[in-house]
Length: 240
Image 1 (tube, rainbow, N blue to C red):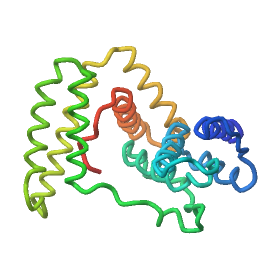
Image 2: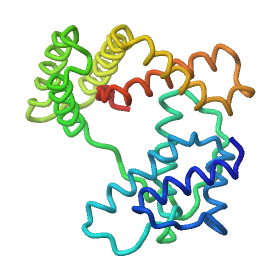
Image 3: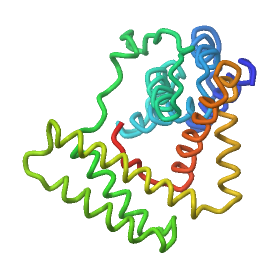
């Protein structure tokens, strides 16, 4: 997808999120979105970042004016950083962060992630929902029950976890997350798995020429895991 097509897709998404109000991506806004495209921000990742900004905006109450795409810059960069960590893409084409709408550097506008207790609570809620919807079928129930019990025990510690205990907890969370995603890959319909891989390949297409074949294959595998998680609504148990 060339830059002009990329900008048109972002403009369409922005219009949809602004409930039909069209704000053209021109001038400084075009420069912002063009940087996303040239830095290799996948279109769906950019839209995810935009959605995060709109979610916060809607929580503030009735909208006063349509949102410009420039306001979403910090959230899009955050989403891109998360995507690169998830896929293992570390060689950057990313440019320096642009100022956000208030004039502050986008990097300073980013918020710290959730604390470990907050993360555990969110995962437990998502696991309860997963069990209720049966997204993975009954075969996942024993794993969901076991993971929930472990997380609940970790969350219940009155002083939290620190030092070596915290590192051990994070390692355990990563292991449980890998176990969940292995089960998801094994039980998901074959058509879904094929579609997930195709989407992962599309996301990484702009990086293929600059990566070794084994590194690209690993990145595709990680990207496919992320897409599958999104498609099935699975929680990320690991705390990045």
